[in-house]
Length: 284
Image (tube, rainbow, N blue to C red; front, top):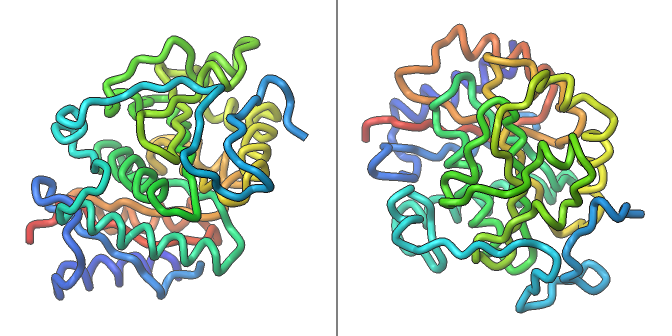
């Protein structure tokens, strides 16, 4: 119950004081970073070799992965922040990035999941924009992994339909070099999905996925892995996969996420560290 009380405290503070940073004026989204929360590679897993001794070398070359350049107008239409974004949304995500990176560094972590109670509350857009912001930090790169095996949506935000996706890695002998995609943003790789996977929870709990997650986590210490997972209260996927990420970032929709949802999320998360909450679609 402690975690639920802390979430409720953050949400109530957001609603009453209105001092937090607006993420997206169209969504009325608000960022809350809560300091009070507790908080050898196989050939198939071939990654881009863009580092020397785990030190970032710019410009980063993506020799193994697919590059898919996305038109800036499409990104803007889909409310995705762009390079050198000076909008309120871009500045807000940079603030969120800094807070998240500080928490990760304090605890020696490099992976987290973006979760929500229910679908349609903005977790995927949050994961994408935060990944882009982290990728722009000169000390880090980001890998955004779409592990929502029920309704994968990251690729659609980049106007991209992959020939191969995460499920092809799982079900056939397709290497990650044929799946990982760089959307024309330096420092960012996307591991996309493209369709629903049967028995998604069991799949995420399988040894092959657990092994992949371990490789992703340990291959580059300066790379931050962001997982977009299914809603906490609609499946047990995030729980089955919870040993593979260090912490969670919670997206809450104002007027939709109920107190009962908070209680149930607290029960699902247990003692899993929480980086903070984002109160989304809140009227300013």
